[in-house]
Length: 572
Ligand code: C2E
Ligand code: MG
Ligand code: MG
Image (cartoon, rainbow, N blue to C red; front, side, top):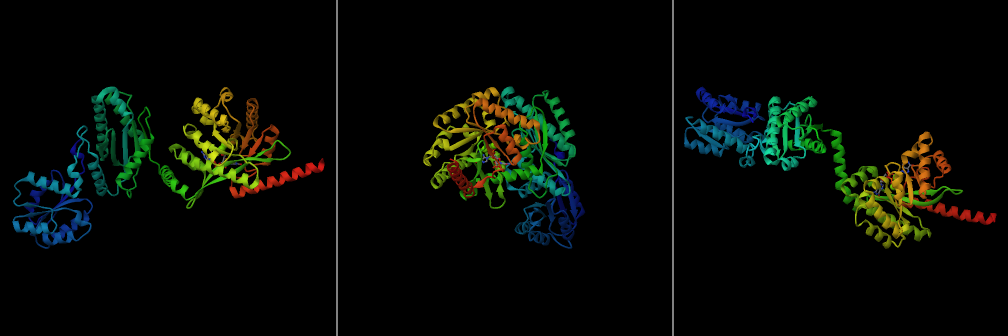
């Protein structure tokens, strides 16, 4: 709000006459830091020392040692120094033209009798040099009198040039639910809030020697020397905000990118602060969060997976694997079905676990495409095995919660079954328990329709959600898949074993079979068998396998069946 706080640009005055230097220094010194040189040699020295921070040179042409023309020539042939605008100080018209030819941007005629004009030309030349875009922009926001974004960015970059050693923080502030403030209390009140926030932000800038701007609407940026105590800063800020607005209902979210990496550009630094700010969505209290580099790397990785998914599908990097399920209640375990599990075999990073990308793709809807790929792949495989081995191995596929709420889901899965000439019962549908608890009435309707056509539904991850017994009796399901976490501890924890028994009782009550997944050891297997579990899936039998390898299990099963049949004959 006060212009003292603006970073003062540096201007070099080069003149061999003391009186001229003093005069010019007095005129431009009002708005700029001024340094001096008596001739071209000294000037070049000064220019090199202040290369990054110098905004303008006022240059006399006729001087001893090295004159102005010579200096202009040197500057103009230097990639770096060329950016610094030069205004020449002249008394004759012919010199002006030549100086302009040599790269000067403007000239100021001697004697210096119109200070305001000189100042205006200096300002204009600097603005021009700092970017043509600035000319058409306002430096300050009319409502808050803070810098506007273009100027702010420019000044922030300049700040770095002035203080190259200084650690800095980029901060983004945003008002929670500001549209509601406007809607509920009117625009005048909204403006009052914006101004109050601007005041506070500006005060922080002044106190710390940093910069503030209103970036847009209700978003503010701060660029300040690194702050070590954000708890204190935000506490004070929040208290002042409540006091001045006379309301504790409006809160601010603050994202901080601390100790900014100087090698990335200014926009990116604020983008990072903005990412954290956005992740703080609408709390009812003013809150801040500091950007975390690891978080960023994770985000970058996720971003990479998202952008690569389509091409990865096209390049067949995704593969459907099959993990067998065995019925265990007879004399020997019998291969009864399989679960289709997706694998991403990435050319750079190797196999990526679905635990990494499925939740990610579920959050943005991409899973829709992937699931269809798996369903198709699974259905094709069932058909191929039927043709090759004359037996049907039902395969279960995972249905994401967003699929269940997709009005096209029913048609799509039916179509996949029809195209592959299968019965609906050959494609089992696994729906995770938590999907049921979200919007149970809609899911019950969908599932009822699917079952009416002949599909069978398995409730996946049973025990991890919060289904009540009461709700379970209403749910149309054909099997319960126990969540792996129960199996993990059944041999060591009495409580875990009791839980499994309880769930088996529930299943008996509902009259549906129980599938235990994640079974890894003989001991777990024996316990589950004893407890009455029907079907088992897990590393104990096999990891998920590519279709070709799964075929060995089918062949083994056929062989076993044949042997069983033969021994039956013998014993008869
Ligand atoms: P899920 O449906 O509960 O699948 C069971 C997970 O347990 C699989 O992990 C499987 O590889 C793993 N598993 C099986 N036996 C054992 C064992 O003995 N020990 C251990 N430690 N783990 C075992 P995976 O393949 O990493 O899949 C993780 C989850 O990702 C799945 O959990 C499922 O929710 C999801 N998913 C996998 N493929 C798809 C898909 O095509 N579509 C959708 N929507 N989700 C999928
Ligand atoms: Mg599953
Ligand atoms: Mg599961």
